[in-house]
Image 1: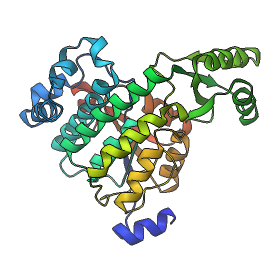
Image 2: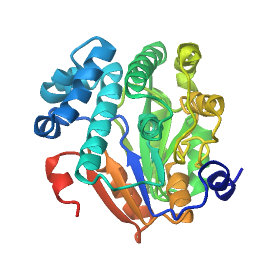
Image 3: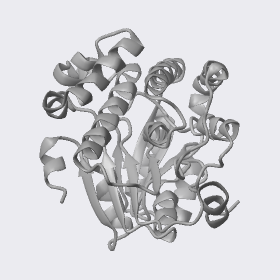
Image 4: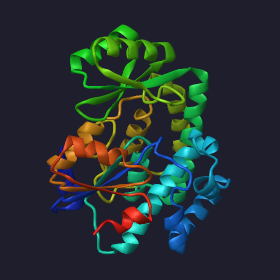
Length: 318
């Protein structure tokens, strides 16, 4: 089903203009969400509810750290989600008439997008992401891996690097930036080969080889966990990391793609292209950091991009 058919079948005709996008793992920082929560009891309640849902002081870790704990996947993933949800809630309380016609996110950010579209409720999303992060950390401990960001490579060069080193493409972030994932020694070799090709390569400080076959055991565990989780029909199109296109309306289909996301590449570039092709002219990033905002600006210079991660950035939006 193409996007036009999806819109007509599920939502009726409308003019797409504004989309949301949500941050992924790695954007976390100590103190995130605190000023928004302290300014609004309803936003603070999200942090309290999240702590109750996971059974530990997630709010305290977001507000006060330490960063060593906040960086752990089973803490980081629900933490980034709750901050993203808090940023969205603060925006909606300031602009109650605002509407969005499409949403998406990077990796765990796609789960935030599913929440924003009504596919999962808040508490369920928090618990799923705690489990997802825990399963991914366990997979990292089973098989040591890593990731490297390569800038300026052609498709042919990327294929050559992957074939020579055994790594795979994990994140297609833009036309000029692709992240590779695989065994530690393969990542080191890929960085060396990229440098020999006069390309810029940065080995990332991550726990393992995310969005690669190294996450297969995490995918299996998450599949078992999700057997008891119902995915509702999305209330607006949610872009899939796996396909770069909107999820279907069927909850089981969405669940299947979210499991595939664990071991397959994130097609962020295609997601942004889909937004533009659907008529989106403005994108707001919700959650800590500005990584996605920066990538979108490089992909589509005509798109108006903003981010909401704290009180100051919220105030800056007209």
